[in-house]
Length: 256
Ligand code: ADP
Ligand code: MG
Image (cartoon, rainbow, N blue to C red; front, side, top):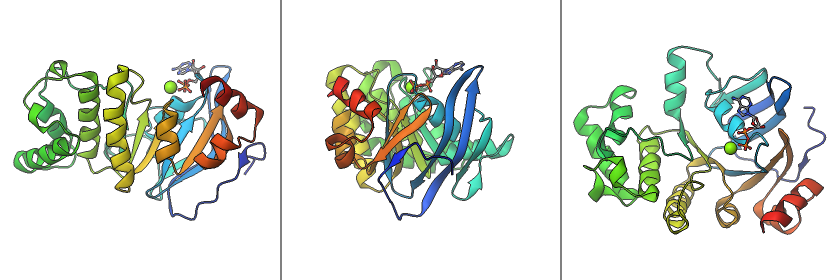
């Protein structure tokens, strides 16, 4: 596999949902993803940690095919990622993505933000899409804001809408790339609580975050990246109490 440098102390016997095999990507001279090998099991919550610029967002974007890769393969539920065409719309429906900036449609109501994808991509009727959207908005605690515009909501509320919008597509997994990094501190927990609820419900999640409390509590596994490589994979218990590499020890000493 060519990953002899990474320290891997986790063995998970879940059926893999995402398989990332020998993935490389460059931006010019920068080797931004350097021989990435890992898997995400069905129902697993993987937290990706690492310093800024280590390739975490690029990895997320590659899994959703928002970025191409130079070599290697990524497959989801046994299917290699599509190159072009309709397959991409299906992939993006199957793989939810929540960004640091919530990326809601500014001129659409909260309800419309959540119903659009299911109607367009999944072919739901308006009635079914609205019923489903309201149930999801209920689940993330903002059903009473359904008729408002995104700008009328707080950042934490908008991010919870973004999560509901992802869920409305019945995704196989959700990628969350620093979902709380743009939020005022008092709004972080309301979003983390929704994420913990998803994790407890068995959603497969890959989460890039600097929220170590969430990582400890919700992660089945930590992936630590530096300089485009997976340097260490461990359970939260292992990673936070006994990090094996100098890079991870250094990282933890700076943030804990
Ligand atoms: P992280 O999310 O871990 O902070 P990123 O995946 O965003 O890291 O970026 C990894 C590296 O790739 C950084 O050095 C960043 O500057 C560089 N990079 C990201 N996107 C591009 C791009 N579109 N073109 C050139 N360099 C990029
Ligand atoms: Mg990033």
